Image (tube, rainbow, N blue to C red; front, side):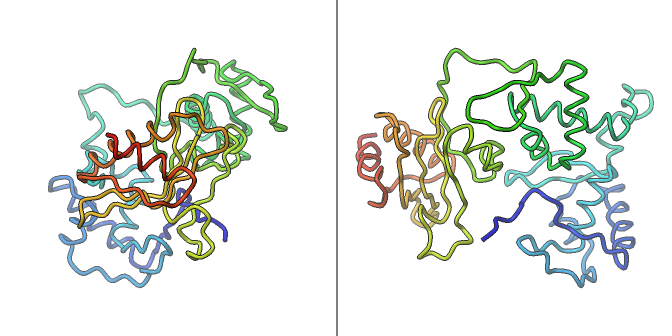
Length: 302
């Protein structure tokens, strides 16, 4: 089954209702405090909406209009709630106004694309046109033009990497650390993970999210997070928050070939950190996967 592209355009502008809803949204934000989409929906009351059928999102008319106003620059996020919802307000209330520091003029489309690809390349350090384009979901053809511009300006350098058969580019500000010491459980939608081809080429790690795969056909679990340890992805763990029981459930844990000896200990520490962040009291490891016994022992020892 093809995986949904969660970052691509996913709403539809509906002229038959959008103009009226947009006007009400802008009027409400102009006279009141910043509001979330849910608060705006409640404030505006009933809004006729014939298109509550966006697969995977099911946004109402207010939310769809808000997102378009956000993309057009008419509204901005003044802050976020504890659950990471945007609090929307008029852009004029966020950006400097008359008598304050001037706002830079809007760049043309080509300059804007160059800036986006430059930022994507900085985040990647090294990558292909496809890698850089995927970071902000920009068209690959436009990204390719921007890459050429950045090479000409000295911001990107063509390089070769053993095992990669496509043109690669390194950002001039990319640095190679003497050693990697970090660890992290990676969301399936983390920028390191989302571009699956890059992930496999960099780490030799084949990953597919299986939440849409029928349970009998799943290989690793429902919601599996890759585990990054130092400079490699060494394991994957299927996690679920049992909030009623106050437990973080590791329903399966699998080590990658060649995983270091301290994988279970380091993963146990990261699971404990996640449990604390979620406000859960315990970590419980199920006996599924080749890493599960060592992980259960490491969790019990903490």
